[in-house]
Amino acid sequence: MASPLRSSQAASSASQARTTVYPITPAKSVAAAPPDDAPSRSIVTFLTPAERQRVDALGQGSYTTVHRESFEDMLRDLRTQPVSAILVSVSRYQQHHATQVARMVREFPRVPAVALLTGNEARTTQSLLALGQQGVQTLVDARDPAGWRDLRQFVNREVSTTIEAVAIRRIRADLTGANDDCLRFFDELFLAPRSLTTVRQLARRLGVVPTTFMSRFFRAGIPAPKKYLATARLVRAARLLENPGYSLTQVAFLLEYSSPQSFSRHVTQSLQCGAAEFRKRYSGEAMLEHMRQRLILPYQQQLIAFVPVEVTPQWISRPALVPAASALPTAPPTAPPRVSASA
Image (cartoon, rainbow, N blue to C red; front, side, top):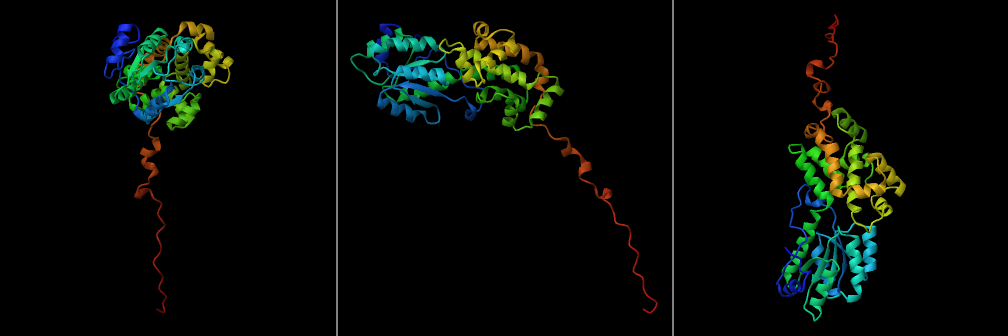
């Protein structure tokens, strides 16, 4: 569907519509992960006080909001924390904001920017056109209650297009027929917080002894879990680096590497190229495809049969540990009591 912010005709129709959401991408469902494990959603806003209250009330259980008074503050948030969407009030937007909005959209194209329309004012059409010219291509018309529901649905829909959600869906499709235990391992590679950086942390999150966890991969002839975790982190890094507003240093710290040099060494060891070349060569999708071709598809049959976490200990089925009655030690027979002659 065409964006309402690209022409005066579209802007006029937007101001007359009852309640409409014009998404950049078609709706997609969030498959793969239970709702409680879905990636966190954070929206950075530039709204009027009344709009803030409505957005906060709507977001309970769906997303969190970070309200800012300037676009400079919003840019700082985008550079220092994960953000799912940007929400800009049509009523609050002024012409002198144009340069900052254009910069924000240009530097962070992977973060959807949304214009929120909550009332009709003399300059509404002009503001809509200006936002469209600066690259804001999505409008949520919330002039009646249905529009607020549409906003929530839009945020949920955008989460389904994150690289984490895409990776989980695609790997699950590759491993059709695999047991839940194996799928849980791959889900956690992308659902775990970015602060999870070691296999020991991952094993504890899965509830298994780290040494036991690692040995199961070796016995199954599957690459070490460290390889999967390291590559999943690079998938996330590649997606972040699609935003020109992120420097290599910022991405290194966002993904909890100890230093930019540590991130560069990780890239070199994994892909035999430098961090700058990695940024040019791999998008998030390209890095995910690399992971599938190197670590998923060549081991597809082993992975489908693989149980990395929940393995029944052998001792549970050992009857020798529950002795049978015949195997119990018996006391030597006692002699009958002796009766004295006098008795």
